Amino acid sequence: MYKILAVDDAKDTLLLLDFDLSAEGYQVVTTDAADSALRLLEKEHFDLILLDMYMPGITGMAALEVIKRKEALKHIPVIMLSAADGEDEIVSALELGADDYVTKPYIAKVLLARIRTSLRLMEKNRELEILATTDFLTGINNRGRFYELSTKAFEQSVSHTSNLVLAMFDIDLFKKVNDNYGHEAGDTVLVEFTQLMGKVFREHDIIGRLGGEEFAVCFPHTAVEEAINACERFRLCLEQHAVMLSKEEGQTLFVTVSIGVASTHVASPGLDDLIRRADLGLYEAKNSGRNKIIN
Ligand code: GH3
Ligand code: MG
Ligand code: MG
Ligand code: MG
Image (cartoon, rainbow, N blue to C red):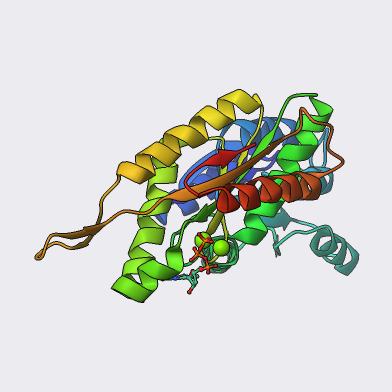
């Protein structure tokens, strides 16, 4: 059920909105001031906001500006609701990021249709965002998303002077899996590999598929020993994990992984340098027998 926040200083408008939207099956939360709306938005999730333009205190336009500037809120569709129907007001609201503009007194049928349109667009945007940021085969962060999240984590680690660790993973002799068992078996290995990553690493560790059989994990606020321990647990789990290829024939296979680790406890100018150093470790792990971690 979609949850809508209705903000208007006129009590009768709020009553009417509550009535019309509830009748349509929406969950409605009403508030008569922009500052309380902004507080509610900090605490609760909303799918859409109906925002009055003119209110005492913070105006709807000022609240709109705040909402559209906040990373966590800017994707929520905002429909401005106002008795003012001047073209300049409508244009400025849309330019500030409003998704739509409806004049008061509103026609319920039209407002509801516009709400449905905004919600439909929001859903489409969500789908596109998922498509653009997740790896199709494994469902984990793709390369672009991994870099985006890790860059943020790196910047935070600098400002909080906390340690951050980056580990690069490359499945050993993976080409042989494809050659000996087929590409589909290779895909199964990749999927189970990421499932195992999800089990071993923590919620706030950032996991990504960089491409092919190469993966990376970024460990924010983590000491290098701690991250190495986690990687070692993963290496052992993987080594012992039987990938089931065919349930009927009970055919299984095992793979191992080589891992390179780099940490910000050695001064690092940026994420790229960390990745480069982790890559060097990985290269060394490959050249010294595979199935090991090099820091
Ligand atoms: P090394 O231990 O040195 O890493 O050897 P390797 O065989 O793992 O390395 P190589 O880079 O030669 O081979 C990687 C293989 O991964 C080749 C490529 O066909 C396969 N591969 C890449 N992406 C996919 C995929 O999405 N699915 C499957 N099944 N195979 C993939
Ligand atoms: Mg008003
Ligand atoms: Mg490789
Ligand atoms: Mg490989």
